[in-house]
Length: 236
Image 1: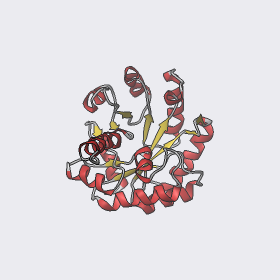
Image 2: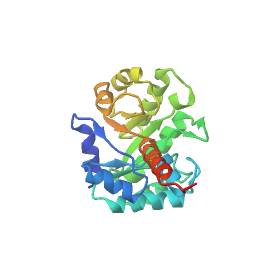
Image 3: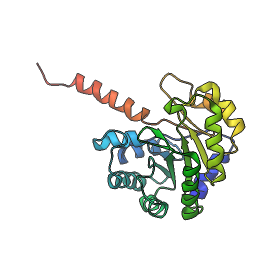
């Protein structure tokens, strides 16, 4: 499936639910369950490779995404964090080489928010290099880093939309702010589903175009593995 077809999934009028596989096996499970597309979580992939989130070498992350994309016949969007310091041309080439048709790009690095104007210029360069070959999901990290005023998230989002991104992801936005954000941002909105929080259906009703899970599904799977380990652990 091409990026154009993946892009079209965001304009059907239905909430697009994108599970987050962390390896080829989990990708196949989600594809076999009938999901139309997948979105890798950097934290889940990092954990599967033995790293903390944000510490995975770029080469290993791209290789992991490539294994996931090869394993399924549905589109895969790759969380490539803040781009690993790569120039737009190299970043786009490496994402496309994995077989992914979309990507997440964060506007913070090392726990610090980037200058939004400089980041918007960088996103515009990514768009120019990618053309229509990549669906670009621009993550807005204001809420994640304690900036609670939705106006700041909207201001950043508008810059990124002007730069040509396809979707805005205000990660950790409070549920009550989703309608405000959706009304103010002229692009599809990505919401994060959290344990104990609103269902994907409810997030869609509040304005989310698509719903992702971050590392949540990997953590649930590992909790199940921990239970198995306790059940079949060594005899004492």
